[in-house]
Amino acid sequence: TQLLEQSPQFLSIQEGENLTVYCNSSSVFSSLQWYRQEPGEGPVLLVTVVTGGEVKKLKRLTFQFGDARKDSSLHITAAQPGDTGLYLCAGVYAGGTSYGKLTFGQGTILTVHP
Amino acid sequence: NAGVMQNPRHLVRRRGQEARLRCSPMKGHSHVYWYRQLPEEGLKFMVYLQKENIIDESGMPKERFSAEFPKEGPSILRIQQVVRGDSAAYFCASSPSGQPQHFGDGTRLSIL
Image 1 (cartoon, each protein chain N blue to C red):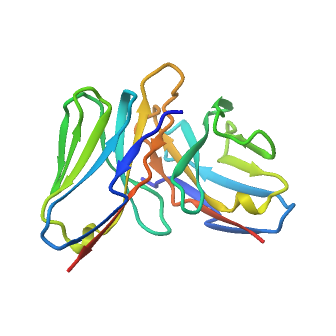
Image 2: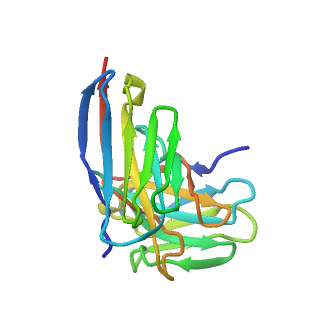
């Protein structure tokens, strides 16, 4: 079974602080996606990374894909209360039988206090 | 451009009844994935379909669960003879080519 380890599980910080969420696996991904999910709603896609070493920025969010395509990180600069939510990483493992199905990490519940 | 539409949003069934969950993919998307989110657990893949074909059902329970994506109409996830353990949020995602996947807001299934 391929596992995608996401950490930390919970993160409680003050407004203005920086934070990083990590996703790690022992297997190689063909692509990795980050989502944000609000209570009672479905995951909303933030970014997709496909190339080893790739860095993508979305306003105050920076996403990195590891050189070996086995890990990824999400860094938020100067967090705001509006960033509060559940962040999920999800990857498609390289290999002929993945068919694009996503394997999800356990999620990180972020709370940003004013 | 409408997103992925799932209905109903909430579904209550008694043990032994059937549950039918519907998913209309985004316009132009022919790939549909179903995922289940059990309480206190992460999202888990169930089944991947393209029009009229099941491509990968490796995440589906062997009994009582079935899925289809007909030529016309939405994709349907069907659970027969529901049990308490089927209570979960069921999410559908669609894609034009497999990636990336866009999710609907899910169906929350509660079994009495």
